Image 1 (tube, rainbow, N blue to C red):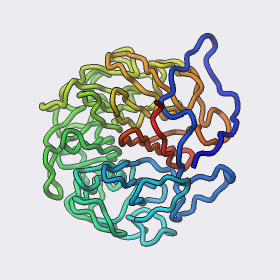
Image 2 (image 1 turned 135 degrees about the vertical axis):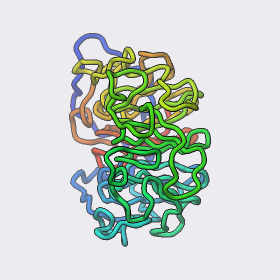
Image 3 (image 1 turned 90 degrees about the horizontal axis):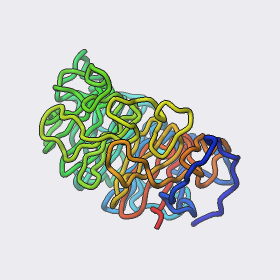
Length: 392
């Protein structure tokens, strides 16, 4: 059910002429919001079936279900059908013994059903993949869970269900270890993981068993180094804080939040450490400043972009620290975004447009998912998930 939009404060914007561009998402606002009340902005965020605390990951699964990493409550919530109304309670709980419980690893021993800062979630074949970031692992279900606390079938990054050490306790990574893995995606049948703490992206061609090593790496020359920007100046190969992964019009896209850019490869690389072919969000490969070294954003600049998702010709991007969503249609280095939601124009920024949260405002949007023309937005700073249609 759609409600009217409440007024907000005047946003901060750069002086001079600015452009707004066409809307990225439906200007009427989200058709449903989970975890938030428009009439009670002081609603509690204690765990319950319909509350969220700093959600970072969302997945609109091809089977019609919705999955949310309720990050601050250390749990995964599932809706068997994508909600069409505000604050619809979740159907399935993974990671806690009950809907009113919270705590890292359910305040007990880590297992194949517990979570510690879950951050990314995606469809993996007929099942699910979850980036269990602070347990330094990825949990995989071959089929979408149908029961509460259904254990994962496969664990990557660790060899045992109770293993939780970064890089399995070693100083250096390997092809089989993870360190603060924040993002997951399925790309051309492969599983891609943003192994953020190791400053790399790993790809598995065919996951079959727990502890299996990755087949390919991006962001480093090999599997055993974890240097920021591959140990050299910012360029086309290295990364600082990879997070979001998507395939966009045949190109592999990775949001490198620490270097304030999105890296593009013309195809999914088949060799280790392949440099990217283009970047957007920066004017060139050796640039890395947020908002291209300006206080105010622009159509061509970003500030800590985390989530990305692709649909048709548009790459939807959560420009997190600018509290906006922007859409690119051009793939050349330095190309400006052409579509915008969350701010009145490309030169404005500010959490909730420097006001109180309203139905169409954003505060540190983090994760994105796209199915057909519906976009799910983990609006992390507002403790909610927004379900929104692409603009026509």
